[in-house]
Length: 282
Image 1 (spheres, rainbow, N blue to C red):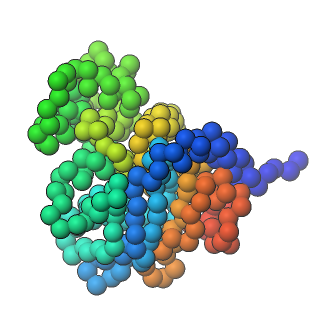
Image 2 (cartoon, rainbow, N blue to C red):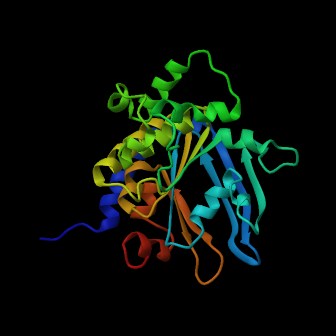
């Protein structure tokens, strides 16, 4: 008995998802644009001349071997790269046509609009579940009319409400790893971001928790732009509309290819992309 190539099966999964969404996506337009991004750590260039468009209402997966600059790239999108001593960047990141690096830009407001979920769940350990979700509002000094409604809405959108609604006063650290990650997603949602960056959000989770995170991503993607770094090819096929392949060949990371996920997994234009998605290296 013969089996279908990996690219065929994953490509079919991605194609079915993509075709069901793409018509509405084009109407919403581009939400985030990266133009000519270069990044350095000290004297070492780690990203060279990256340009990408991210459509509103879609999920874009960034794939590629470790060390090719995927995480660095998404950190340039909400100005977290500059937190690292010695880090520098050049290029433009446009949110609704406005450069987030323009002089005089309020960095705090940028990070409210472009949220981030990290690889390791990071709820505030001394805060309750409720306090964790609403923490961003307090830090940003944002006022809402009904915090209880917002709390339920964010936990519901993050796929966590039914699991925690009877213990909102429990500490966030009492939740399982997968629940903590969804709590962090709910916390990000409370400040109404337009873009959500996710840096390998499932890498430390079991398959069941991973499935719930993926369901959450699919649910959220209709209302915001989501960019996810993942090493899991099956995950990229299941949740993303577009995929960008990054590679570092002894130098700074570069984008080899980007396109609809179904095409990247079934008909990649570059041989290096084909070799990566079929598991020949990486």
